[in-house]
Length: 94
Image 1 (cartoon, rainbow, N blue to C red):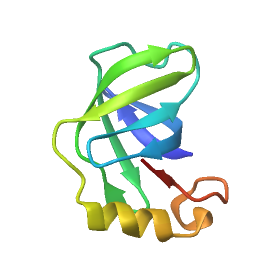
Image 2: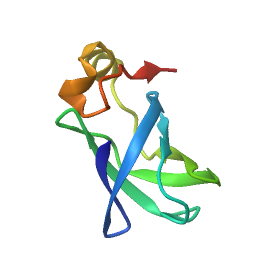
Image 3: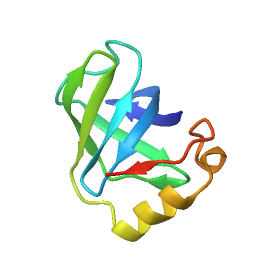
Image 4: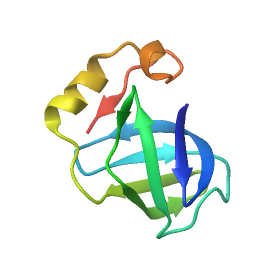
C-alpha cells in the first residue's frame, strides 16, 4: 500500500508497476476519475505529479507530468518490499 492523494483526498493504493513516465495502481472502485491529479510517496521518495490517464475497474494508469530518474527507479525496485510498504513484494519496473 502506498499513501497517495487524489485531488485533495488521501487514498491508499496498491502500486502494481512503475516506469520513468508513470505507474499502474489498484484501489477501490470510484477512487478517482480520468484527469484527476495524483501525488504519491514511494519508499520515502515523492513521485512526480501524476494525472489519472485511464481507469479499468479497480485499476488505473497514472501518467507522470515529469519523469522519475532511472536511478531512483532502480533504487526502489531493489528495496525489500517491507521497506516500501508493498506487502513484502518487490516493485516491477517496466
